[in-house]
Image 1 (cartoon, rainbow, N blue to C red):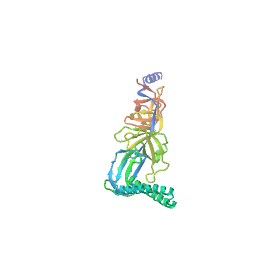
Image 2 (image 1 turned 30 degrees about the horizontal axis):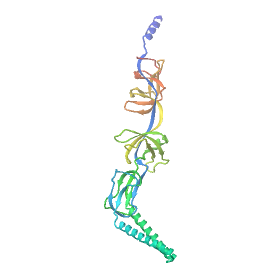
Image 3 (image 1 turned 120 degrees about the vertical axis):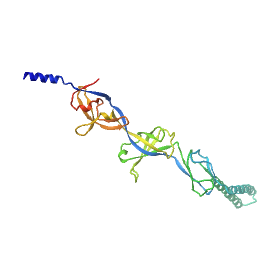
Length: 324
């Protein structure tokens, strides 16, 4: 009996704890985001329309041109309108001279007050005709209502247009907004003022801020529109397609390699760690974000030693040695 106890003691004294390698990990703040697709729109845009009928004589701009407020962008043919203005002006000058003579005659009591009033009425009518003729002529010169960029042109030289015919569309590139659509599952996480990152084809991401959230979803897609205000409009054009990442939350997470993840007996995904006493622990984790190198996960202590080599040979509760 004594010999058996000695053999058992010798056997147990020869068993060494399994050796593993660990990676010391410190939790770091990770921003969670929701993805969305959308396009660039202008807060200030207008369809420029003719205010009178006529024939397009000259197009002074084309799509993509920059214009300034008051610039003549379309010229309609004057036809006989200049002649009408000249005739009206000539008649107004004649009546003005006649009115001044009539005033002198009235002061000399050579004509009656009604005769003077008749000439004065005729003068006022002639002056109104001049104003109407001038306005009709001015309407032939279509001017830009604000500083902007020509988005599209709807007419060409020789086109016959009527009053209120659409000629071209203008947008103000300095007041651009990015409108994206979010699913019902994501919209609850978005609030006004959150930061966002906006990307367009062939360019680096640009910073933006959530400016407006639609209170109702669209009737067909059931998506919610969100307006983002870009920090800079450089390189952006109305109508461009963009993708956006809206930062909705910041959480503490650890970066882990896919090789460090295991399933426990209950089917939970987690990692195995080593305590300061050398005891293996299993922590279930939740995916926060993934990239090409691995995963950011939550569910671990602030600071932890994750088993990177040998985790498949040990289980929770085992005592191990950490290899240097």
